Length: 215
Image (tube, rainbow, N blue to C red; front, side, top):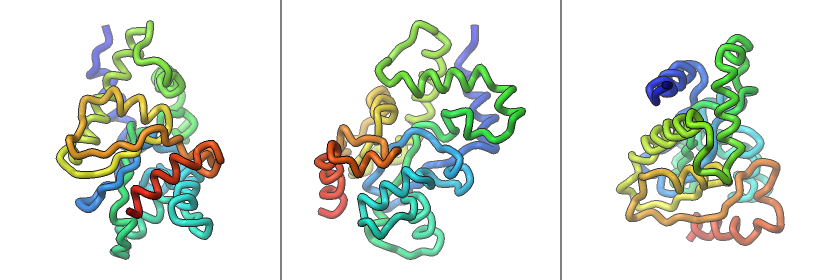
């Protein structure tokens, strides 16, 4: 029987070259939770460094801001720009390693871990399910939840606003057993992929996010 340690070891091994940590500082009190890094995130070493991050910036700061949010935050931090609004924003991925095989540019890695990547993909695309018939999927999901809990623990006592973006992040946030007493949760925010934050159907909830950020 495969144990949780087996999956922890695989993730630890992949994390050596394919991992992106949360972007959190002591000032972060407006925290977006997202799924996992992809190609641009691995390249730049921060969450939402690609088109999804561009959608977030544009909707939070205005049409003229199309640089991905992760890159704005990285620059603000590295160059000590000390922009008050950017100082507040934090980014946390449920998984620090990519959930999609395509992000792993090494063909040998893709081949060696093919069954593992298939399992990640099954969990990534089954947001309507909390449990699976396949016990190995349940075990891997539990490992992902444990690791996500570790991402949340540093902010457990912080007064902050938490915004889980998309069904995957919302599911894992619900299943996580780390909840802060001083957290304000904004529900039903879509993942920013495919320019979803600019769609009319999500206008009200995106406005709610902006109101919370600026008020």
